[in-house]
Image (tube, rainbow, N blue to C red; front, side, top):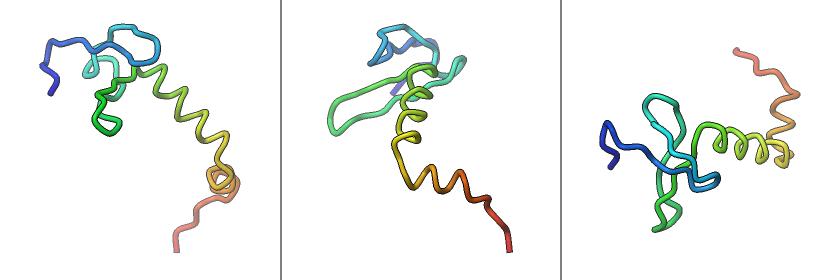
Length: 66
């Protein structure tokens, strides 16, 4: 659990960040605690979306509401 005034350290770039003020995400990979600053998190999401054929198909096909 993260205290209100506690800074987290990004598991990728090792920078300190305030998850409430700056954004980012924290959680666990299996039993390993991880935290990602907003820059590293958005970079990972973008990289996954670029490599995901289904994500690219979904981006090309507009969603219609019936």
